Structures are given as C-alpha cells and as structure tokens.
Length: 146
Image (tube, rainbow, N blue to C red; front, side):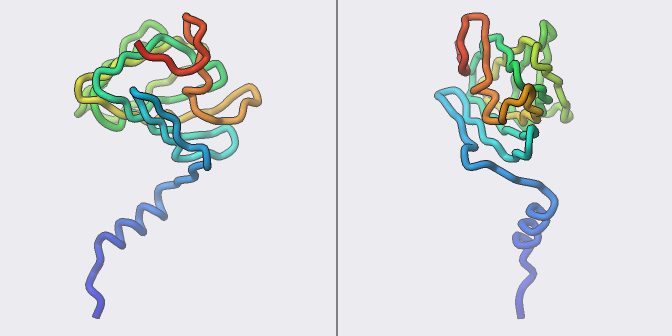
C-alpha cells in the first residue's frame, strides 16, 4: 500500500498552477545580483532578481521595457522618477510601475533582497534581460553598480 506523499501533491500543484517557461538564455549575473528569467512568451517576461546585501544601484532607465516590480523578500528601497519606495521584509506584496522613461535605482539593506520584474518589451526589441537594456547618466549601456 502506497503512503500519502504530500511532497508529490505539492509538486503536482505547483506544476499545474504556476507557469514557468524559461528560455535557454535565462541567467544574467555579476558580483551584485543574479537575474533568472522564469517566463517568456512573445514580448512578455518575468525575471527574478536576487540582490546581494548592501548593493547600491545607479540611476538608470530601460528604454525598451515597461515593467512592474514585485517584492519577494528582503529589504530595499527604489527611487522611481524621484519618488522613494521603501520595501520592508514583512510588507504586503506591492507592484511598483516603472515605465521605460522612468529613471530609477535601488539600494538593498544588509539583509539582501529579491523581486520579480514583470515586463513587456517594446519597440520590436526581443526580450533578453533588463540588465542588457540599460542606459544610465554616465553613458553605460549595461548594468552598473556603485
């Protein structure tokens, strides 16, 4: 007689209710972050970012991406078009909109943090990673940290 396997039921539930469609080129990283594309279909993409503790971002835009950022865990602050958004560990989930022309940056606490970037790619540009669609005031075309 087989025993009830709660892990199998959980795995089956996750597979049937959570959509994953990662492309082959789904990971970007440097010494401050790891980005993993969890889902991509046409211009739509979901990218998970895990940021190391105490990372400080540089103000930048993603000219070909309209996105919502969704807190997963940790503590950090976003500055989005001059408006500061502080995200604490136990805050309720929130979506923060970042339009393609919105300058933004993030600073992560000593705990580190992670968020989902839920994206629509624009202007006929094929999705890759927002870290590769980057423009900052210093003329950098790739992700840059202080």
